Length: 96
Image 1 (spheres, helix red, strand yellow):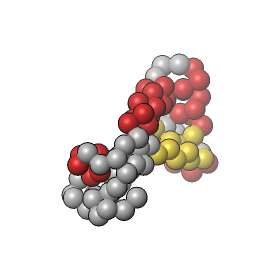
Image 2 (image 1 turned 180 degrees about the horizontal axis):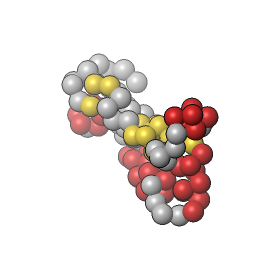
Image 3 (image 1 turned 90 degrees about the vertical axis):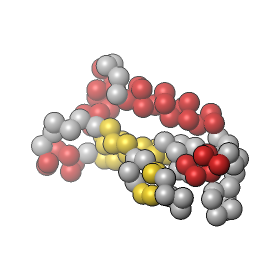
């Protein structure tokens, strides 16, 4: 969990990398931060993020190379309160 929202819902964060590396190797990896569905009405972003996650955790050689060389920090949904309430743009406190 990245944080708790105003309504008390979890704002999830997912970390994807190869965790078998030594601590020294982990410190040398660059981080890539991805966020999806910033506004609640961006439904397509959820499908895009699912595709990204499926690819990064998949069995392909390219995905393994990415996991071995980078740390991916993914926030699939930045505004879960707005999504739960059915908003299209606003958060729980009425802001964009």
